[in-house]
Length: 109
Image (cartoon, rainbow, N blue to C red):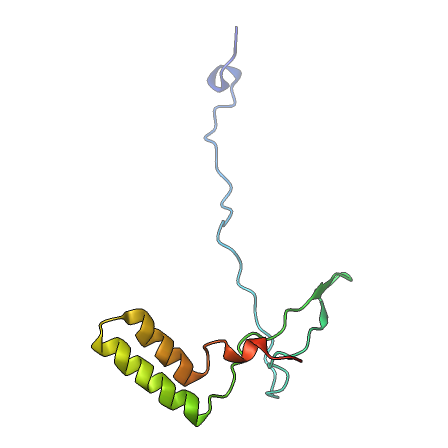
Protein backbone atom coordinates (compact mmCIF):
# COMPACT_ATOMS: atom_id res chain seq x y z
CA UNK A 1 0.00 0.00 0.00
CA UNK A 2 1.26 3.46 -0.88
CA UNK A 3 2.13 5.77 1.96
CA UNK A 4 1.20 9.42 1.97
CA UNK A 5 3.19 12.30 3.35
CA UNK A 6 0.75 12.68 6.22
CA UNK A 7 1.14 9.06 7.29
CA UNK A 8 4.95 9.25 7.30
CA UNK A 9 4.98 12.23 9.64
CA UNK A 10 6.60 14.73 7.27
CA UNK A 11 3.48 16.68 6.41
CA UNK A 12 5.09 20.11 6.49
CA UNK A 13 3.81 22.38 3.73
CA UNK A 14 5.86 22.36 0.57
CA UNK A 15 7.51 25.66 -0.19
CA UNK A 16 8.17 26.39 -3.86
CA UNK A 17 11.50 28.01 -4.55
CA UNK A 18 11.03 31.63 -5.55
CA UNK A 19 13.02 31.61 -8.80
CA UNK A 20 12.52 34.49 -11.16
CA UNK A 21 11.73 33.43 -14.72
CA UNK A 22 12.19 36.86 -16.27
CA UNK A 23 15.29 37.26 -18.43
CA UNK A 24 18.10 39.30 -16.95
CA UNK A 25 18.93 42.60 -18.60
CA UNK A 26 22.44 43.04 -19.90
CA UNK A 27 24.11 46.21 -18.78
CA UNK A 28 25.80 48.27 -21.46
CA UNK A 29 29.26 49.58 -20.76
CA UNK A 30 29.34 53.36 -20.84
CA UNK A 31 32.08 54.92 -22.93
CA UNK A 32 32.91 58.56 -23.40
CA UNK A 33 34.05 58.35 -27.02
CA UNK A 34 31.47 58.19 -29.80
CA UNK A 35 33.66 56.06 -32.07
CA UNK A 36 33.47 53.10 -29.70
CA UNK A 37 29.68 52.81 -30.08
CA UNK A 38 29.60 52.87 -33.90
CA UNK A 39 29.45 49.61 -35.81
CA UNK A 40 32.18 49.03 -38.36
CA UNK A 41 31.15 48.85 -42.01
CA UNK A 42 33.40 45.89 -42.80
CA UNK A 43 32.84 42.37 -41.59
CA UNK A 44 34.98 41.57 -38.58
CA UNK A 45 35.13 38.75 -36.12
CA UNK A 46 34.04 39.62 -32.62
CA UNK A 47 34.91 37.65 -29.53
CA UNK A 48 32.04 36.83 -27.20
CA UNK A 49 34.03 35.44 -24.30
CA UNK A 50 35.67 32.06 -23.71
CA UNK A 51 37.38 32.20 -27.10
CA UNK A 52 34.16 31.97 -29.11
CA UNK A 53 34.35 34.08 -32.27
CA UNK A 54 31.40 35.11 -34.38
CA UNK A 55 31.48 36.78 -37.79
CA UNK A 56 29.74 40.13 -37.72
CA UNK A 57 27.28 41.08 -40.45
CA UNK A 58 27.99 44.23 -42.48
CA UNK A 59 26.04 47.39 -41.86
CA UNK A 60 22.85 47.16 -43.96
CA UNK A 61 21.48 50.66 -43.44
CA UNK A 62 23.43 52.15 -46.35
CA UNK A 63 21.38 53.83 -49.04
CA UNK A 64 22.43 55.43 -52.27
CA UNK A 65 22.34 59.18 -52.65
CA UNK A 66 19.44 60.21 -54.91
CA UNK A 67 20.22 62.69 -57.67
CA UNK A 68 17.97 65.58 -58.66
CA UNK A 69 16.61 63.48 -61.54
CA UNK A 70 15.58 60.74 -59.09
CA UNK A 71 13.85 63.24 -56.84
CA UNK A 72 11.85 64.74 -59.73
CA UNK A 73 10.92 61.32 -61.17
CA UNK A 74 9.93 60.09 -57.72
CA UNK A 75 7.77 63.14 -57.03
CA UNK A 76 5.96 62.70 -60.36
CA UNK A 77 5.47 58.97 -59.73
CA UNK A 78 4.18 59.67 -56.25
CA UNK A 79 1.73 62.28 -57.56
CA UNK A 80 0.55 59.87 -60.28
CA UNK A 81 -0.05 57.19 -57.64
CA UNK A 82 -2.03 59.63 -55.52
CA UNK A 83 -4.22 60.73 -58.44
CA UNK A 84 -4.89 57.21 -59.77
CA UNK A 85 -5.38 55.82 -56.23
CA UNK A 86 -2.55 53.27 -56.52
CA UNK A 87 -0.68 53.05 -53.19
CA UNK A 88 2.05 50.83 -54.68
CA UNK A 89 3.00 53.43 -57.26
CA UNK A 90 2.88 56.14 -54.59
CA UNK A 91 5.22 54.13 -52.35
CA UNK A 92 7.59 53.42 -55.24
CA UNK A 93 7.82 57.13 -55.96
CA UNK A 94 8.54 57.89 -52.31
CA UNK A 95 11.27 55.22 -52.24
CA UNK A 96 12.83 56.62 -55.41
CA UNK A 97 12.86 60.12 -53.89
CA UNK A 98 14.63 58.86 -50.74
CA UNK A 99 17.11 56.67 -52.59
CA UNK A 100 15.95 53.42 -51.02
CA UNK A 101 14.56 51.88 -54.20
CA UNK A 102 17.51 49.51 -54.61
CA UNK A 103 18.74 51.05 -57.85
CA UNK A 104 22.36 51.19 -56.66
CA UNK A 105 22.40 47.56 -55.49
CA UNK A 106 23.17 46.18 -58.95
CA UNK A 107 26.31 48.20 -59.58
CA UNK A 108 29.66 46.54 -60.21
CA UNK A 109 32.17 46.71 -57.39
